[in-house]
Amino acid sequence: MTLFWRIFGLNAVVLGTATALLLWAPVTVSVPVVLTEAVILLGGLAVMLVANAGLLRWGLAPLDRLTKLMTTVDLLRPGQRLPAHGGGEVAELIRAFNAMLERLEQERATSSARALFAQEAERRRIAQELHDEVGQSMTAILLSLKRAADQAGEPLRGELHQMQEITRESLDEVRRLVRRLRPGVLDDLGLVSALTSLTEDFAAHTGLQVQRRFDADLPALEPETELVFYRVAQEGLTNAARHADADRVVVALHHAGDTVELAVTDDGCGIEAAREGAGIRGMRERALLIGARLDITPAPGAGTQVRLTAPVPRKQP
Image (cartoon, rainbow, N blue to C red; front, side):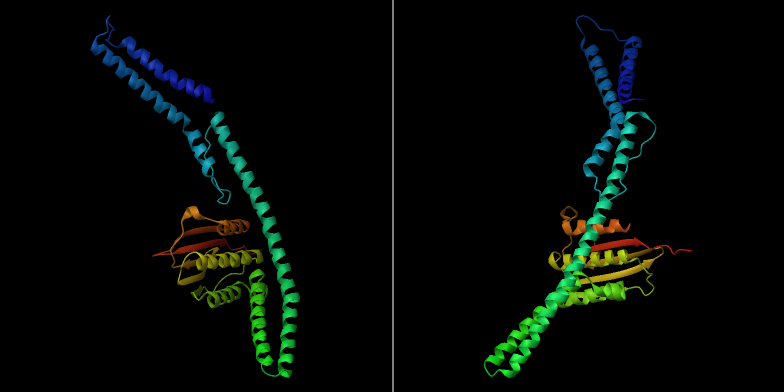
């Protein structure tokens, strides 16, 4: 039934019922109208209007649900669909909207994958250049300063030693940036070692207390999955240091059934759902690449918990 005939039918039911009541009811209209008759007629009109409004609301409810979904849908939270039952224009409209959402989610996932892979490649290139060019140049400067300091007298020797310390600190900062841009330990030793190095470096530079809780029987993951886990942990730790005003952060890796879960939990001030910024949306985009689910919820007691749940790849027979 089309939308036109649905509305026409609902109105026809109301008007037909009202006509039948007027024909069969023992109520007549006098001239002039008696107060009792006016009350009865107005009451009947009110009942007819209420019935018509209720039936129209019921008939147009699918459109209201569709409008609400249109205004709240988020492509970073896939799977939001409306049930479409039967035929008619409304059901076809809902099916078309669901198909459009499916297509947009696939296109968004594909474009996000290309962008993130390009970003990782650029990070790898910058990290390599920092390590090969800047790092080697600063190492050569350190050696030159040491030779000059060994041959110089006071007070020049003290100034050269001070320059050595500044250069050494700068070299350490460059190496730390290289590790953040592209964690070589992730490629060489795996996810657990990379997260251990990340949390130790984070605790040393922020002063926050970081606890690690890693299961011993973690399964092997795909390189892309490990990279997503690492980046989500990195962003979660960064948010805890910048925005949460936390004192302690717990980084946990758990294996349950056919999923692996990463949880970054702090004891800070918490987060409002409406304040999701670029960092959180970036985590959601990364989660979509590996078919994972990202949940950001209040932590038990206080603080925020970032939880990433990813499926374990099936072993090929």
